[in-house]
Length: 287
Ligand code: HPA
Image (tube, rainbow, N blue to C red; front, top):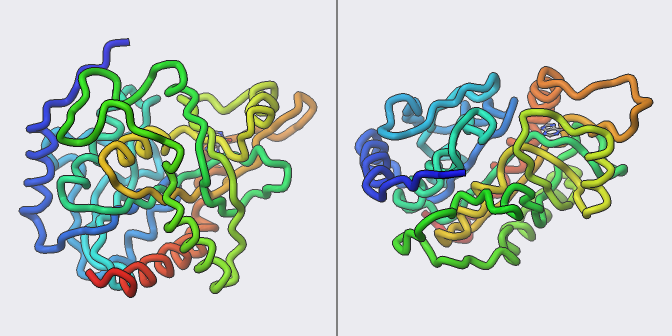
């Protein structure tokens, strides 16, 4: 597969355009997965920039992903909230899928909070649970489908980035701490990233469980790779929107409506957790 590299100037043009719209200098970017868009409504003094207006930005095409950046303050932290993301299965290249991450880096973002909707593979998980991503299995990445494929752009990061600390330890500890303080149950586990758009067969779900996966989804891993490459700290939180079906006998089927519905139901709890994390970050590193 040929993945054309995106010129450095495109990232600069997008970052300059966004910075021209606002005096906010975001330090944390938050990406909202399927059904989780309402969190962006809590941003104070918001400046809203539709993806369609930003030079070279790919457009979100999936229901539940409005497609705009909301800049402002949330719990005392200057943030850029990505209200919706684009996915590989929409027909974008991996550099397009992760374009915004490098734009955020150029804007000065130091930490990226990635949220997503995911199917539960761990038998202890229930629909509506939140899961802290401790590590990931990037299945497309393992066979060469990487957003870093092609000549390395040294201005962003090294040729061979390490991934053993992909999900920042300090941010994970902070998330667990805040969850406990707020009485929010936060599961922990390994997120498996797949290409989609099909949901998994029962045999695939059993395979992913054997491989050590706890949750499965169609996003996040590429964004994590590009963020880590650029030195951005990553915190990942999955909402378990459905339990992945692991037997041919089951009557139920995964469907996008259920994913969106559970996402809406969980969104206030996720919002409380993220705001708690941001206010602790703001206290520890005053913006
Ligand atoms: N599989 C893959 N992606 C998902 C799922 C799932 O069951 N639920 C939400 N996103």
